[in-house]
Length: 110
Image (cartoon, rainbow, N blue to C red):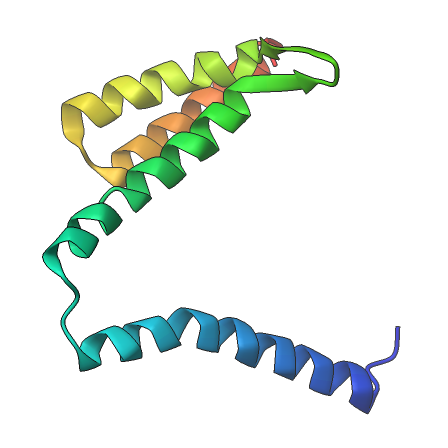
């Protein structure tokens, strides 16, 4: 695919919109103070997002039926979960999770 002016400016525009959608809320929030109840409510957002991402990968959807457990992902999640409880280090969790998934795949369990 040739990089025409139209494609180039579309990529630049999409990048700008993406960047603004991430930076603009921080700029706006710095201008005024949020109510305490809103700050407390927003503190649960990261936990909710991570829970949704993890649970989504632990199950396989079957339209019209209940989801089934993805054994490979579950086996890789367990050591990462134990690491999270013990160390509370994001780097350690990621390294253990990747290593556990590599081992699960090497053993043919996923």
